[in-house]
Length: 110
Length: 116
View 1 (cartoon, each protein chain N blue to C red):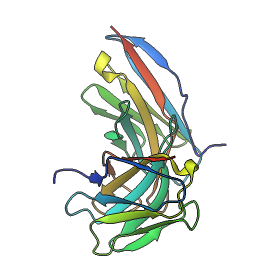
View 2: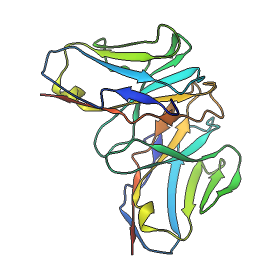
View 3: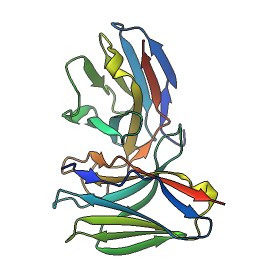
View 4: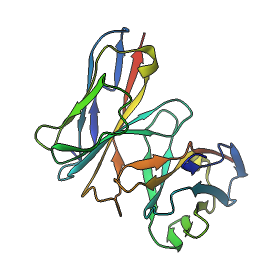
């Protein structure tokens, strides 16, 4: 079992819809969770961090964390074609390094 | 500078050669990380510096890989006797404190290494 798992996609949604991206992790001791956006040929860009169970909203983005289920998700409301990218879920290990999933490719169709 | 910078942006070398990749973190960030990303995969951890010392080098694949951060700022990743399998994008990230929790890491643009 991989430490951080994501569906590679692609996930295709129409413009204006809600995109839902999911991630599971194996280390119950993990405390910090991040979502990065990566455009093709570019480096990862931090878009959300979450540390407590529940929801955290920032603009059109909402991160959700459920530590009991070892599950993190990212919702993107009113999806735009410019949101088309690969979304990487990352979890901090006990030494501080990030463990990444393989990423989910999101396609937002006009 | 405002963000993490990495040089060179692209490096093409021949199998067996030595390469150095440089990272300049965000000013004031004490923690610096190196990751490697292959096509279609998420970044994989290589090494983490807290200040001048390597706090975790468990991700270095073998002894051909070495990294330094002599003054606690700029870091250099060194690869000896490069192999074709070393071809990847090498990413550097920095964070303010480097604590295991609440540790937002910000990435540089990466160095694309191609070993022919």
